[in-house]
Length: 307
Image 1: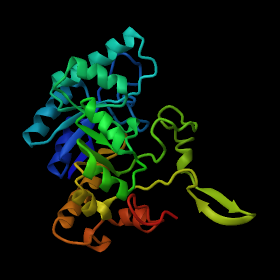
Image 2 (image 1 turned 90 degrees about the vertical axis):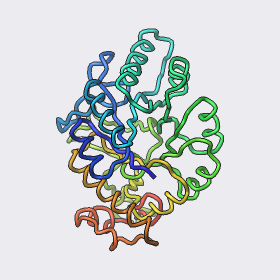
Image 3 (image 1 turned 45 degrees about the horizontal axis):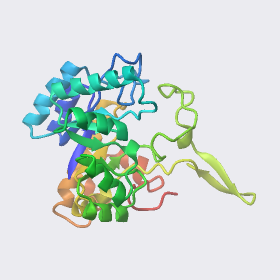
């Protein structure tokens, strides 16, 4: 099982790969938009961090990652609402062209029409189906395989048992969420989020709410989001099932934070390949990790109790 990790600069990608990341995913800016891009991110995060490396920098990242036997996934996964616009099609394909010329290994797509567009022009390029396509069952994976997709990420909502069964039946590589991400069906959350996620608004789905039942206060809960973050304790099962890629979410997050997550998962993978079962004690996690996720609600993605 390979660790698929986000990077925004060449230096970030280099450090991540040197510390355990197997593959890198990233997007690039596009002149079609002022702030946005065809990969569903703005150029700059609210913290001021650069999110999207230039095409030239992506070329450098590809050369380095591939020299370490890794792959680079290029995000072009924006859902297409109206594909009748020639200008939109031209801008999208120019964006994909630049990624392919930079040397990326996979194009990540989030819409059936964009899969059709890319396969018509680049029949040999490998395509990874984005979470926007919400693959949750055998028929969806079969359809994607018939369209020429090489890899697909399963929906955030997929259970451990569903992952096991889909890995056994699928004809394409399976990717799953490993750390982080939104628990809503991707792209369908209509809650108010300010552009760039302002510090005043933040994520309403991740706030604590007072929850009552028949006038009895049950307590403060994340009532709008299951917010299951960590999959460390289930890595052995995921690897046995045949999961190809474990996705670490966080293109907008600080590079040193992502680096700590990669180190923890790489260490856990080493342990799970030699020992069973994995225990929190054996993982030797940073104190902040245990406080944030192991001791405050058991926020295990593929097992455990939420509240």
